[in-house]
Length: 242
Image 1 (cartoon, rainbow, N blue to C red):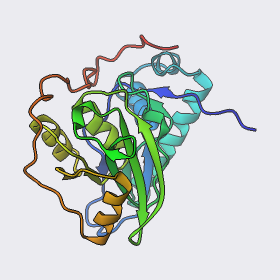
Image 2 (image 1 turned 180 degrees about the horizontal axis):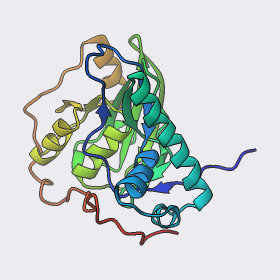
Image 3 (image 1 turned 45 degrees about the vertical axis):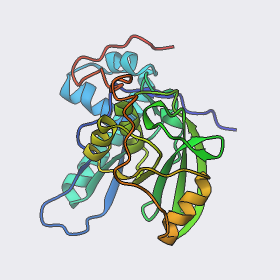
């Protein structure tokens, strides 16, 4: 039995999630993991040594060398062959979101839907949700699902978490303007104002019969939760490694 991967600590979610060559209508896509992006950022952009990078990401230097070689090859492949780079998940963690590394990798032709989740039902406060249920769907059918513990993180970090998981649609109950803006920034379609059973809501959405209220808002939590994204590019330190 192989050893599980140790989660690689990254500073923050990226500001840009994909890069495509000019003039290519449907280029082949290369999944570029968040830990690969972090290694490129630390070594090639911030000029850290591999030892310093390993310390910042809480892994061994051998692991960093392996990630770095993979990342450099993917960049070269994209540049030489006109491929699209798609930033996605991987075996990573951000300090504010313990569940970061638990998301399964999504296939190219899968649509991923998330629901704020409370014991089988749709959670009614996005910014306070402690769980998402994430569904992978194909050709109108649910093919898999998983429940993720978010630790009740603030709405900005939750939006980044969903984007890193390649969620395309979010179904929820109440949601504040700050969370709406954060989701819009990362390109996630929002369907608020939904209640009831979570599985049934996804089936209704796939059937085109889901009832939701686009004007639903939650005013109680916009100021109670920060963005959860306090670590900006260029000022991340290595504290918190265990």
